[in-house]
Amino acid sequence: MTTSPQSPLTVLVIGTGGREHALARALAHDPTVAAVHAAPGNPGMAEVAELHDVDALSGEAVADLAVELGADLVVVGPEGPLVAGVADAVTARGIACFGPSGAAARLEGSKAFAKEVMEAAGVPTATAYACTTPEQVAAALDEFGPPYVVKDDGLAAGKGVVVTEDRQEAVDHAAGCERVVIEEYLDGPEVSLFAITDGRTVYPLQPAQDFKRISDGDQGPNTGGMGAYTPLPWAPEGLVQEVLDTVLQPTVDEMAARGTPFAGLLYAGLALTSRGTRVVEFNARFGDPETQPLMALLDSPLAPLLLGAATGTLADVPPPSWKPGAAVAVVLASKGYPASATSGAVIDGIDRAEQLDGVHVIQAGTARSGDDLVTAGGRVLAVIGTGPDVAAAREAAYAGVGTVEFEGVQHRTDIAAGI
Ligand code: AMP
Ligand code: GLY
Image 1 (cartoon, helix red, strand yellow):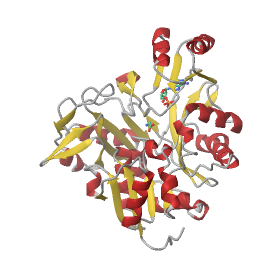
Image 2 (cartoon, protein in one colour):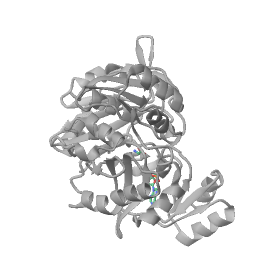
Image 3 (cartoon, protein in one colour):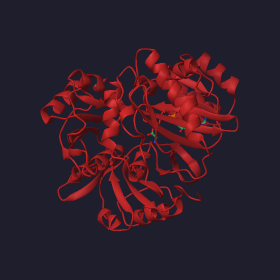
């Protein structure tokens, strides 16, 4: 790579969601960054980056745009482009790209592959069977008993998983998948622990927690995530080191040994069960919405970490440091989400929210319609509150939520409650 870390960087962020807005905002505040571009982006990102059109699933299109912009670093946000090999196409042009190769992104792209890697690396996870016939499904369901955990083997944006006491619902979900993973139920609280890695050196971020179900009290169907907070004051001491030693480093080492090194963001979704820490899932990219509160508290400049990961030089970059205090993100979703999503509702009050102390708004499913900002997707935006502790950050976030309006808005009222 020809980039000199001393010269201010031109960075291109690929994606349209809240995660990408949070990353672009952090990059825009980074003194080592000269210019932030985003494609396709969203109206919130337009405030911190110059937007461009691109087919994010086309490696050649993304690489062409990166060349045209003179980008020193491309940051690929979502899993779709990563699994499609966009990072491979960008690096093939000699441009540093944060995000794993298509081969390494299979850690997220195939749950069966992730299980195989975990087994080879000795990483603790739920026992699971990959099934392709109704007979295999029935046998696996009977072996584990309820609650049943049935996962579509392919990419499903966090919505391909059904956890249910109802055997028929489990059978029906399995029948709708080409290949399905059925696994042991994991009890205990969930933790999202992310690590930035160049395929060798692994820097964990602060643990966060995500709220995946649509309704208060963790009721209703799974979503992409309805809220998140960081840090976790209740997390056992030594959790990050334990996960680094037993999950993150062994997985990164196993991927390197296979000749498909994983460089980028390794997302470990963990369950702290009564029998110990277990991996629920791996993702190959920053989590959404966990990235929103994490970026609010990141103290180190983001670009050197991402560039170090992209160029195999992460060990030369200091590990990430964090601002004191806490951050809470509350997602506002449109009517019908997660089953469907309405669009075109006028969004009002983001400016009022951002006038509040310690509050900012990260956009996702939004669009411009004339002078209006309107909804354009399931998860519309997230209100982020920061404060000296989780309770204060939560109060700030919900004060902001109270000022934002659009028709049919849904949000949870219990994000980070009682922490
Ligand atoms: P995944 O896409 O694998 O992360 O699954 C989405 C969500 O389903 C997880 O965040 C959990 O809330 C739940 N889930 C997945 N696997 C299990 C499991 N083995 N036991 C209990 N809950 C699970
Ligand atoms: N917040 C869950 C995810 O990003 O997959």
